[in-house]
Amino acid sequence: MTTTVTATAALALGDDALVLSHRLGEWAGHAPVLEEEVALANIALDLLGQARVLLSTAGDEDELAYLREERAFTNLQLVEQPNGDFAHTIARQLYFSTYQHLLYARLAVTDGEFAPLAAKAVKEVAYHRDHAEQWTLRLGDGTGLSHERMQRACDALWRFTGEMFLPVEGLAVDGEQLRSAWLESVSGVLRRATLTVPEGPQSGAWTAGAGRQGLHTEPFGRMLAEMQHLHRSHPGASW
Image (cartoon, rainbow, N blue to C red; front, top):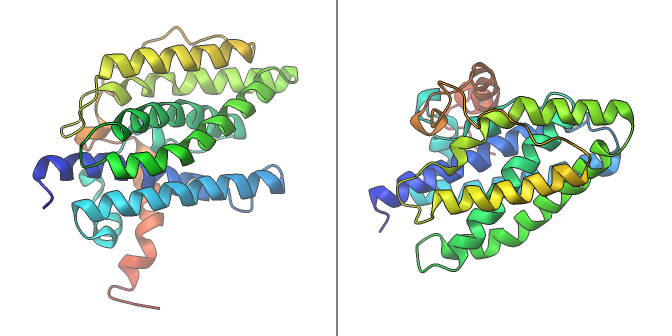
């Protein structure tokens, strides 16, 4: 039986995966090369699979995805950020996939309700993380223009990273240990890519924990309207 605590955590993790899956899906037909279009689509499908399992733990997956209002979503603000240029997508992916891989690795070895999902998903997320790291190295240590764009993307998204380490009811992980491991890993990748680790705070004055509380950035509302449009336009329809 799903408890309220379990449902809270499942919604948070499920919303993260669902929203980022949609964002990555927006690259279909627009990725810089065909191989990358396939890679991003595969990552998006992995995340969508995770979202379905997690949301079904909390209730009806379709209703939770398509019929909730913006304030009812508890995803991190990081994953809802627009794709921007390819560098922004990679920076967002580096930050989130590193966090998700570290989180699932910890959950997989517990005896909690998320252990089975985490044990399976951690293998998928290891690929997501490696993909993001390899592209960060290519862009950061590439041309002058790619380096500049990658640095700008890392700087712009840095303020959204602090929210990942705040407590979530139902997740038995140490946020500070997770932050320390994340910072060590991400900093190492950025330095190898000849990029500077951003010096600013990892959360803005109003963004710290806001996504988990249902407060979202302006682009999220537009993304949600697009994602939910078909389902809301044809309620009860089936294929």
